[in-house]
Image 1 (tube, rainbow, N blue to C red):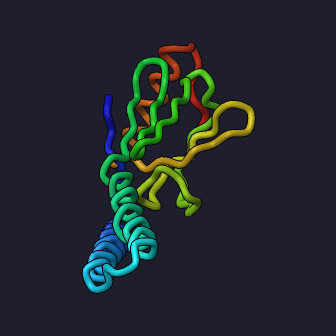
Image 2 (cartoon, one colour):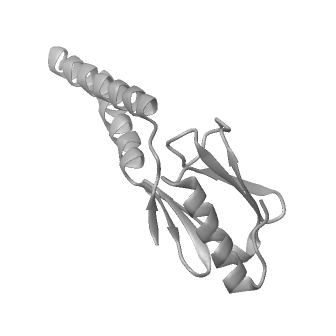
Length: 144
């Protein structure tokens, strides 16, 4: 089951606004000064390629919940968490950097000390589905 990440409106404005501004100013700088190749390369990387990379992550953040694992995809990155390793699941508004595009997040503790923050569109439904899958697959429920 593929679940999209929830995206906060204010964060959408900040991310898209800053990316479009960076790309626009980079393209303007490249068009205005084409005499030096080294600064043009730095401008290209910082003003065009890096914002496009961040937009790639923005547009491709989602979660796949199957019978045995939770797969977190964000841009070119992927993390797989076996359901049997999940220790607890709880709602949070923790602002730490994570593959979550909203502050309405779920903290999933897994393994011995690891945790990840995600932001599925419907937190309550996601937690219920995850609890059922943990219980059905491994005879135990994820604690809350």
